[in-house]
Amino acid sequence: MSPLGTGSAPVIIVNPLGGALQHYTTGLAASIAAAGARVSVEHVPEPSVVGGGGIGWVRRYVRALWAARRLARRSGARVVVTWPVVGHLDRLLLHVLFGPRVRSALVVHDPRPLVRARGYGRLSRWIGNRGRLVEVLAHSRTAVDVLVEACPGLVPVLLPHPIVPRGASARSRTDAGRPVVRVLGQYKPDRDLDLLVGVGLRFRGTHSLEVVGRRWPPIDGWAVTDEFVSEGRLDHLIATADVVIVPYTRFFQSGIAIRSLELGTPAVGPAESSMADLYPDARYLGGASVASWCAAIDAAASAEPDDVLALAADADRRCRAAWAEWLGTAAA
Image (tube, rainbow, N blue to C red):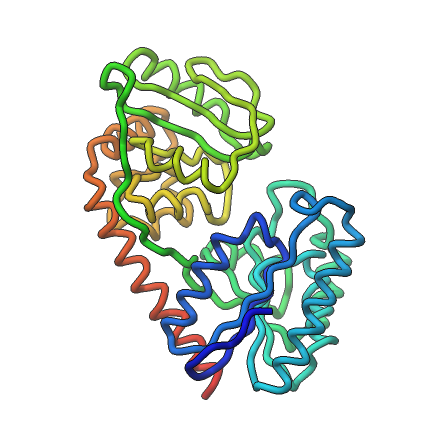
């Protein structure tokens, strides 16, 4: 576990998805440190990173929580867990391990998981509600609403998704000057394939349309590459795109959209989603029609990277202020 460093109001971050959420956790630590807190981070690698099965992962997770408990009791730190390993059951687990002596919080990104996950059924939610000492944090109003509906009596805290501006993108229109439009990340059932087909028909021959990620089926009008994308390659694919689109029928927040904003590449997504929090107007947001998405893609393709980075900087300021208020209120 990394040292707490200098500052006040210590916070221990336990990240059970040491691979998948490493970038997120780095941004979270930066936001918390900007609030004046001393930050310690413990990454727990998931099976896809180190191999093995789910049981070993849970054991590593519990060991990390136990170490956080010891350090928190000595230092007076609070603990923030960035992902529920066993869904709502984590709430009871944290409640039992930390008790009233250690303030703890659990970030719930997907209260209605987009892929199969344990611990989100009715019984698990009922058991999780016994963990009343644990604060539940969410990054979108939609996620808060789902949590409130699913877990009577729960009062989640809405805090912005961390964002860390990282510099202007290196856009490269290598294909006869055609804007490069990319979809990144693995396929999930809630991806909007009909939308992508419609965009492909509209922009075939005028835009370079690419999908890169695992398990995607062929899509008319799009060049699909079925492969795992490493962290470094993901940044490169974002930075060299003119537009990144997030084609979901439903989702709670998009790490791809956040990373795109950080790199100065505009992301286009559904108007009725958390992406509306990233932009001051609806220029880069798609509605119910394919035409509205195409208009948003065209607007995004003409955006200047510095203007997008200005939006990222503004989102970063709002994020840091919100987390500072949360930490200050909790300490009062």
